[in-house]
Length: 83
Image (cartoon, rainbow, N blue to C red):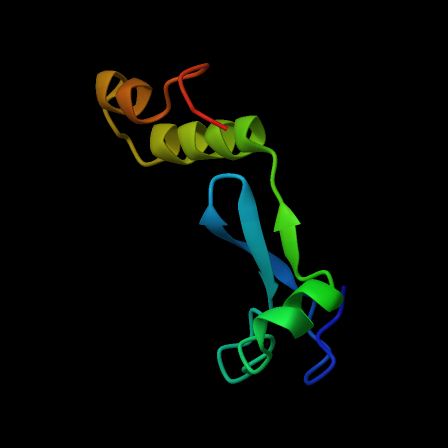
């Protein structure tokens, strides 16, 4: 999706593990924070996320950052998340 205010590509910002908000990455743009909850829902800007995919990305980023394996395994425990 494209931002109607500045034409940037929207990206997902995680609100909770199963829910994300599609937002404009342009720091000078307010979209969709200028909308009320009903408009967010109508424009389908609140989306469900794939928790396993998010956890895998978190694990990869922690590995790249040099986070100790024992710590990252504790944070990203496969199969222990509640939905």
